[in-house]
Length: 209
Image 1 (cartoon, helix red, strand yellow):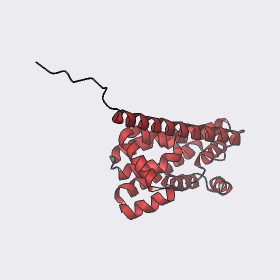
Image 2 (cartoon, one colour):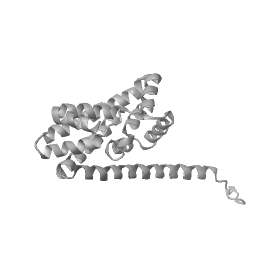
Image 3 (cartoon, rainbow, N blue to C red):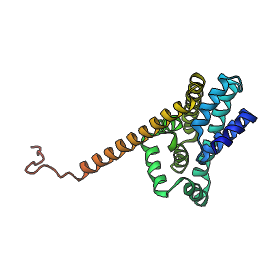
Image 4 (cartoon, one colour):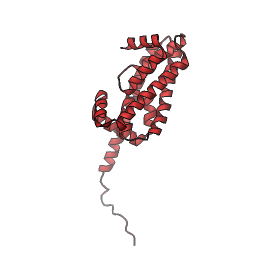
């Protein structure tokens, strides 16, 4: 799959890059980080324009994200169920809705590039949570442009060590996802314990005279 995608970008350039990242943003599991890094290496070799690569990657991912948001908000239960079944279990979508309601824009921004495996979930959950579209679009645009610039420029700078760079980025991404999950679970546990904690014995509320 990776070789076919890379061959498509090598042959068709920016239009292929646009289409592939758009499909991935909707929910298809594709190695987009590797693709962007390789696209950056291609710009260093003169096989692809840097500005076209940045524009195509940003626009394609933003387009795909808007599709995911639209399905969540206006697609109806059947379409949401179909897309969520492509991504995983319904319970995960419910959890993501809570994250969007609690964190808002930062959850959208970070899932564009730092926590990218969560991106399609956040798109769908933002729609089902009825997060304002204008705010979603703004945070989405900022995040996707950041991600495209980050990985393409890294690939351009380290064009002779693409696979090594991809390995480091992949390990870092999953490490951050694991840390974020741990922090979320810890926070929820702390909140739950505080709610269950009884009042200290022997302490009576002070009465006004």
